[in-house]
Image (cartoon, rainbow, N blue to C red; front, side, top):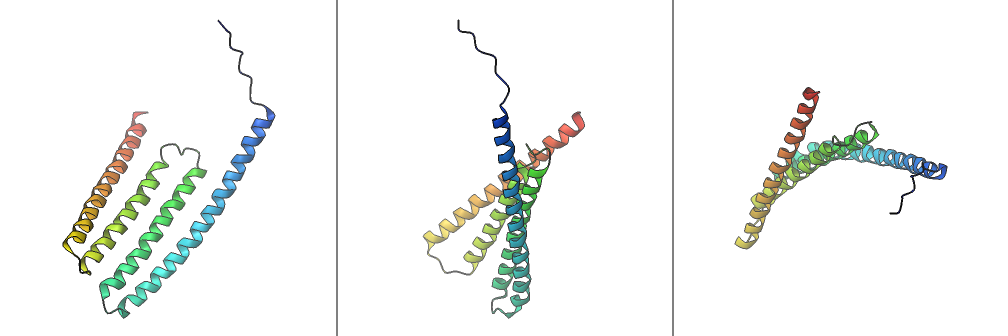
Length: 164
């Protein structure tokens, strides 16, 4: 039998590279966070402008849809920013999943609202309407599945908290 050599500790070079990559990763996360903050401020500002202009549209529903669209995008940005914030925390192994699920839920609700608006304000052939309705069902099922996943994650965390 061949004996395996005992593993040596990591070299100073390995440690330096890992430390450098972690510092670069943190710096890039900071740049991403700043970009998201600026984008969020811009989208919220645009949302308030859309809210003011909503009364100018002939079709008031179209104006309100634009307002909802802007604010749902802002919520998605804020959830992504929260995810970046969690990455800077000490414990982010399982907690980091929930913000991504929230972003997905918000994006799917946004898509569902847009689909509902397109269906109510468009002239469709029966085949095209079937595809829209099928997409609405799929999006609705995805929303329910993701909400269920969030509930399970929270119950699991709640159980861990009181088990110890």
